[in-house]
Every structure is written in C-alpha cells, then in structure tokens.
Image (tube, rainbow, N blue to C red; front, side):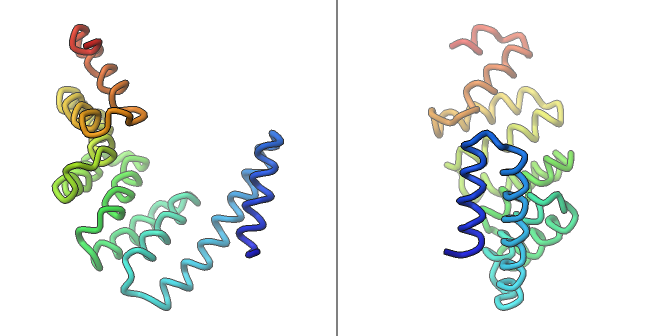
Length: 172
C-alpha cells in the first residue's frame, strides 16, 4: 500500500465517522503528496500534457491559482486541443472570476467536443456570470439535451428562464 493509499483510506474512515476537519487535513496532505509525485513525473516527461494538466489540477486544489494557470498554459502549449485541459483551465478561470476568459476555453472545447454536456454546462456558467442570461439559458438547454440526466443543467436552465420571466418555458 502506498502512502497516498494509506492516507486516503484513513481520511475516508474519518469522513465516515463525521470527523470532517481531520479528514480535510488528510485530504490536503494527499494533495501535497500527489503534487510531489506529479512534479517528479513532469520533470521526467516534460512533453506530456496529461501530466502537466494533473499537476495544474493539484495546484488549483491547493489554492495556488496563478501557478495552476501557468501549468494549464504549458499543457495547452503542448496540446492546444486537449479537452481536459481546456475544461479545467476554464473552471479555474471561473473560480478566479474571469468568465470572459473561461468562455474562450469553453467555446474552444465545445467546438472540439460538441456533444460534451459538461462543456456546455460550464460554458453556461461563464455566460451567466457575464450577465448574458439568454445565452446562458440556451447553453444550459444544450447541455440538458445532450445529457438529460445531467445533475444541474435542467435546473439551472429553468432558474435562468424564471429570472427572465419565461415561466411557461421554464416549467415545460
């Protein structure tokens, strides 16, 4: 059993026991351990966009947003059409309150993977943050049509439509 496996098992037990603060500390330790391993892997394989993307994700989860963004940019320099990198970079930009930049990532992603409901869903969030409610409703609708079981697309679409005063359409 690796150290990360041991920590994960221990954290899960604490979580189940309701000791959420203790579990969170272990989850953070797991992220730091993963970051060490991913840093080594990135050094060994500097041309691997997947490793660079996962490294950026670990940085993002640790709250090191500027470093994560730089890592996502490095991954995209290696693979400009990498779907996961575009999605996660967009998510980071939304978290940093940069919806217009996030939208650029999501637009590129929906162009590459037009049947990706999550890409359309995230795109909708960026549009909503930019006060483009009509476009957000349409984008949420696209996500819902691609995946009717998507956890948030139908609800968010209805919420936006209600705020636009389109109640009949929201409840259809």
